[in-house]
Image (cartoon, rainbow, N blue to C red; front, top):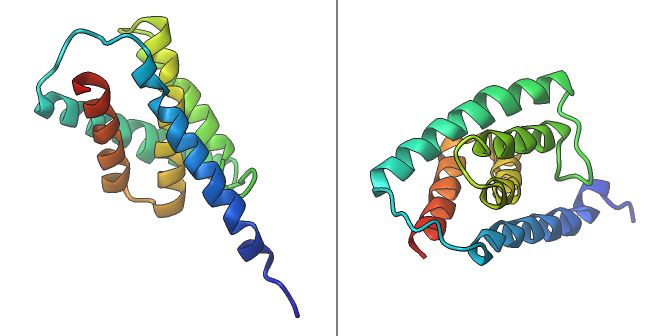
Length: 135
């Protein structure tokens, strides 16, 4: 019986996805920002950030790295884009909040690498923002 190597690695890819997904909620352990921007502002910001960071930056880096993947889930483009995402958040957020954006960004990047769908990335990003600012 010949096994398909991509099928045998599916469990690892899914397992790592859920680990990164749960790490994204580490932001809920950080003290509340004590501000609640309007939902439409959170939506506009999430959409703008996803267009810039996923569609423009991550996809360009994916082409540069020829769509390489680590552990069948993480691309070097995703890691670099997430690092840049966290650095940009340092411009207007305290260090702990800005650094906490790294893990959700990894999830948005995995979603982009899997589906190439900006709407899916936007929905996840908007969900994380609402959780952070409203819960």
